[in-house]
Amino acid sequence: QKEVEQDPGPLSVPEGAIVSLNCTYSNSAFQYFMWYRQYSRKGPELLMYTYSSGNKEDGRFTAQVDKSSKYISLFIRDSQPSDSATYLCAIHGSSNTGKLIFGQGTTLQVKP
Amino acid sequence: ETGVTQSPTHLIKTRGQQVTLRCSSQSGHNTVSWYQQALGQGPQFIFQYYREEENGRGNFPPRFSGLQFPNYSSELNVNALELDDSALYLCASSLTLNTNEQFFGPGTRLTVL
Image (cartoon, rainbow over all chains, first blue to last red; front, top):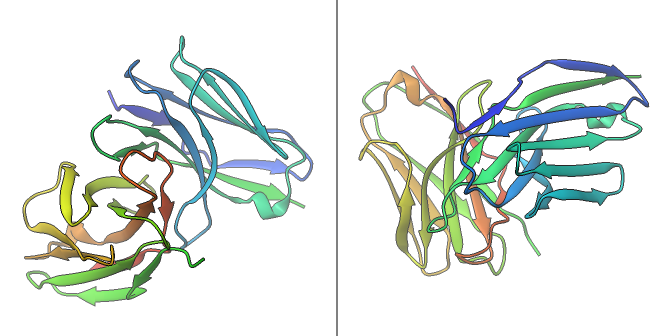
């Protein structure tokens, strides 16, 4: 079983739709959760960073963590064509190193 | 404040050769991590450097090695290149060792023929 599982998609939605991106993880000791956005042929860009269970909102983006289910989500409201990218969930996997464990990434296309 | 920079942007090598990739951390950051991202996959942790010392390593063979310099810039060296080493190599810096947020550079795309 992979430590972090993410549906690779692709996911195609019309402009203005609400997008839900999800990951599951296996180790209940994981505490820090991140979402990165990666445009084609670019490095990942940090979008959201959460520590505890619950919701964290930043503009059109909401990150949600459910530690009891080991499930993390990213919601994008009023999606725009510029949101078309690959979204990667990442979990801080070790208390001793900065190792991030990434999901496979979900490719999102927002059609005008 | 400058972000993370990497060089070169692209590189083509043949099997068996050696390669050195370079990274400059974001200003004020003293911790650097390297990741390998194969096509269609998420990044895989190679290792991390903090104050010129390796601090953690992923599941990569010893032919992957690194250095961090006093100015916190870093190098990734790969010896005896294999076809499967073809990937995007990403460098990420963080403010210090206990900071979870990592900021990535644009990557170096390595092709091994």
